Image (cartoon, rainbow over the protein chains, first blue to last red):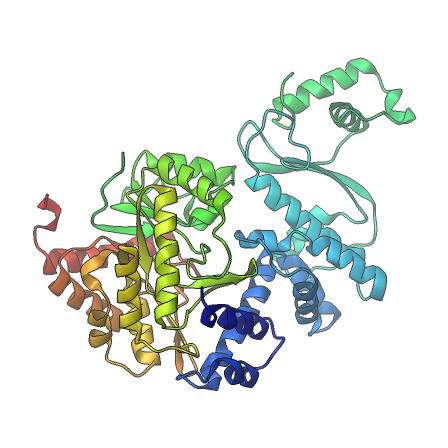
Length: 237
Length: 279
């Protein structure tokens, strides 16, 4: 590239991300033959794309954010793009990778909403990862199998919001959820684990068992492991 | 080995994963967006393999940013090459645009300035991708809502320049031609034949959205009458060209998309009788 294109891209990036206005672009690059209004439309398009991508990735978070206040979703998208622009996101889904963590930090700083938003975002995100991860020979923890503790029954809330966007947010009730893509049929499911399940999953990850799990009946733990393999959660070893 | 493309295809889209393998209706070929398959497992990968047993498939990228300022992603090109090999796709197509700057994706197909410099830049990068993929490249004319500052060429001169510099094929998107013509106050037929239509390896047809005074290329509705008329005019002059129905937003059930493909094939049958028997 010679000087023309690098300058063009520098100015267009600043313009498309809202850092400079259309007059400044045209001062630097010359006028658009289509006029300022049509050139400005590209900023509108890019902004719409950021909103749409995140809304499609986190539809239930969008629903709850709009309940906080009508401008909340737009504020979240604007601030998220500022902190986490979609760098390297050839797959638009990857744009959402930092959204749960962003929501956590936002809640801790401003306290505008409950943990439900970040937990729904996390649930959407691990659901996407489980559906799309490539195969591996191991158990696929944090790729195909995810263990999460939520402050509320997040899978139920997600389902309720998908069916009815006026569904009530449930009261806090801590729960552990395993979300996995089955090795048997490729379907993504959730499991509410028993203590024996947690023991097996901990052992498979090479973790020390806390006392309550270490004291479980070893035959029951072994049976549970067999069952988890049959369900396609764990690989047979 | 690569497969041959002919007739009318549709895009393989996620909402149709459950129905596509069950349909008994005619679909001549399928097009996939490779970004949805490169490095991605699960259902998508399984459906792709199943479809490959039945159809010829081609790969149509949306994020190569072929005209962009960033270095081409060699890791992605390796993955894309593997996908194209797996699909035995006869060529790889992408858009004549940029979509990222400093690796920040804008999630859109953004127009380049119509300049000789941009012709050289895009042409060189298209050749690079063709070399890496070891197959022909086909580049699509995009919809543009504003002529970029600094432009010195017409759209037709720009696209001609790029395909000749790159020595590549053209994916002639007739809906984009129509939208650009209306949005910029030009005659659609003149706009169509101002492009290097003789290099067309594939045609795209899609619906647009009318928003205020603009036609937006949103692929969210049936093909408009004006676009069908332009398609017919193209085939009358150019002969049969493999044609794809794109429907990417407000996606209806599979049968509705296939209805559009049937309509395109009926036009091909009428304008180019015997096309199926051509060698």
